[in-house]
Length: 334
Image (cartoon, rainbow, N blue to C red; front, side, top):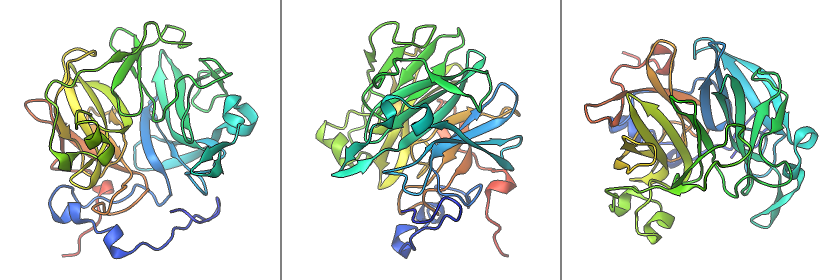
């Protein structure tokens, strides 16, 4: 858990068994390292309309209970990042979000898992407020640094839940999903509401191996993709829908594949081990990546931003690319 001040972050020392890096020793991951030493959960990367990469995530002194809003970083090459500041402030720009709420018996007012998206030639943010409640925001300037206003009602959460994400299809239609990605909703053109009610998604061949699910999913019959950290994207003509789950004691995004956005989805599989609730994006050179933040004891680090290059196998499943860019890897002494 993060214990430092905003200017000089520090972490509680972790016991060796909490950060073993055993996923690397097992050959599930290459010898990756964080892209920088900062305490950020739920890191995601957006490819902007200006050709830059933008990163957001859960940040602050106490990520779970308090932060100021949405912070943003920019990069031209995925290697060197510049801090752009607080682009949305809960106190100054929030409405319903300003209210302090109860989280396990203690007051909380924190943005969780904010995501920046470049959609319809503009920038949008979807965010969650602890312990639940989702907002969708739009830049009033067409710039990633905003300012931002609500596209949905400013008086109440758009949806009660966490971990929202947005996806623009080839025809310009925008889709929304959240939490465990069990439903998908088509948005109106002005992003003010759903065009039609959200639709339940069918997972055609559920994975009933209890070692591939968190306890809450097992209690529901192990028919879920996951239980939080929803993700939705398209690659090579296929739709990918997923959520984070406890897969062999790794906090990993589990993904299923479909030919149609509404499903049915099939071939649920662990994507990148230990990556956490994450997103997937196509870099400017055509390579695909996932973000990574580490949230289990098999990861080589915890709660810091990372990247992993991925590839797709002949059936469309996501695999860790056998060759990673040098800047993502630790130097191994020979």
